[in-house]
Image 1 (cartoon, one colour):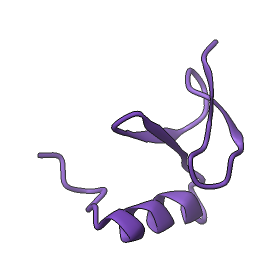
Image 2: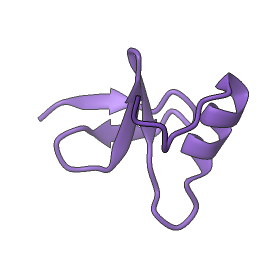
Image 3: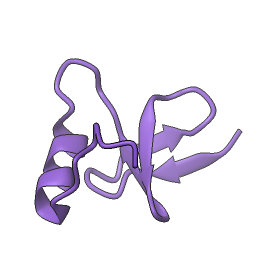
Length: 53
């Protein structure tokens, strides 16, 4: 079981079970209802999370 820390909120993420994104070496937690960390990270770094290229 790999545990990482969310780059944005510092919450512990179980990378085997918890939904998350990985950008480079940074892990970002994903909460389906709010998506706060993902939206904030993508906005700050001008990343389109839906762009699969």
